[in-house]
Image (cartoon, rainbow over all chains, first blue to last red; front, top):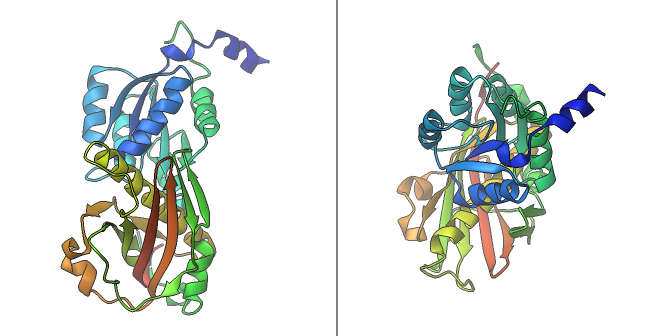
Length: 140
Length: 172
């Protein structure tokens, strides 16, 4: 019952700000497309951890979708940094590698969810919806 | 963190069977591309000689399986041109990344071997492959598997070559 009340108050998808971080241009584009098709506000696509940090210093986001295997700074390291700086940021980690150790590392680094690549649009959207359920007009 | 040798857990036989069981037969990649396995893995002695019509996408394997993967992709029948080259390269390298990530995930479930994949590097021709890829010999896994990668406009023949050794040290 409580959950239904929260859902009714949840803001429109267009007010949910999302950053997509993946060194693959192909994946970034597809993930962003899935999110924008669902009405979400993709504020940036970043190809590296550094790019993502630079964006998030300037603009806030509710959700960061981060690939794990990236050159120089990995997604796990980026999640650790973001978790220390932006307490309200929800992190979804994505990777084609989904061994138990990697999922544990992702969750330990501060991720709220892990999704193995490639994924269906519904899996991604369900995860984003679940993590942003409590965002209302007052908290957006 | 304690490091200890666990020799008994390293499988010594059925390597090719393990690889065959773990290589995905079909993957749909965001409805933009489709990978289908065309052959079972076969043993190879060395990297094959190929034409300059192919690009190689290379990865390093790190962890309990240490080695390299070379994905040879034949561009002869493709519509790749200057306009779409970058996006097609990205599609090809991410498709191979996904295929191999799935393989390593399945391998860990099947055999317990935990291994990571580095980010992909694209090499224009076999001649441009770093010498380390060509010279290094591996004793445990030397297999190749044929795949077909199909996009809305193209069909690519892919040869995925995995060469690796099992390492005996793991963190406990």
